Image 1 (cartoon, rainbow, N blue to C red):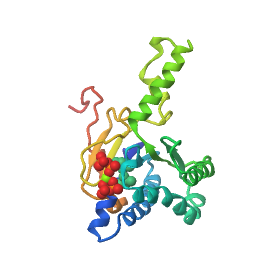
Image 2: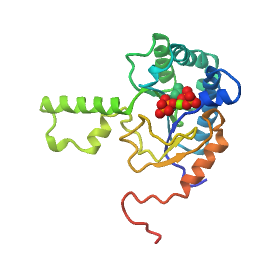
Image 3: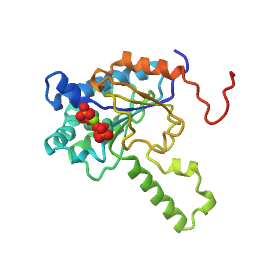
Length: 238
Ligand code: IPE
Ligand code: IPE
Ligand code: MG
């Protein structure tokens, strides 16, 4: 496959509705979502995607019933422990986790730090899990960092450029976002990568995330390959 996007993001949505459709509990939908993410990430890495950035838990998801929030916080430590060999030892995927860290329970924080540390020298795709992530929060923290630099006379007003903003986001150093996929039929961005989405291609599918298998991911890549990206310029083929 040619023209593989370097950086793909996914809003993993529809776990709950998938569960309902299959007469299961919402929690089971999240478990199936996690298994599917493993398969999609493996495929993306094999096909040559360099960065896959996925929305796992938003700054607004704390509003959900306590039982569901607790499950979402407890599931990843168990999941990674159980499949550590398969996911970490026998894979070349590098994990990064972005978002706020001050509200995450200690056990999950420990898993996150262990995962990042154990995979820091891996040479494959960077898989970024966005946990307690909100793009508006991220932008506000970038603004605060830049305000401090200005206040301390480390930069002038003219030094405030899109590149400086990029460098103060959690995604510092990541390539431009080529493609954003959202599953489950919702056509909105919610609170995801608002700054990074400039000129990204958007792909919405009705498929619920647990059913968004590598084959379906491949269909999204094929769709992307047929897009005509102009970045504000003119189409060279016309
Ligand atoms: C996405 O699935 C996972 C999280 C947001 C944690 P949802 O849980 O939002 O599933 P739906 O949208 O209710 O079907
Ligand atoms: C977006 O899904 C957040 C994640 C996938 C983590 P939601 O299900 O929370 O989004 P809304 O509320 O439908 O926009
Ligand atoms: Mg949802």
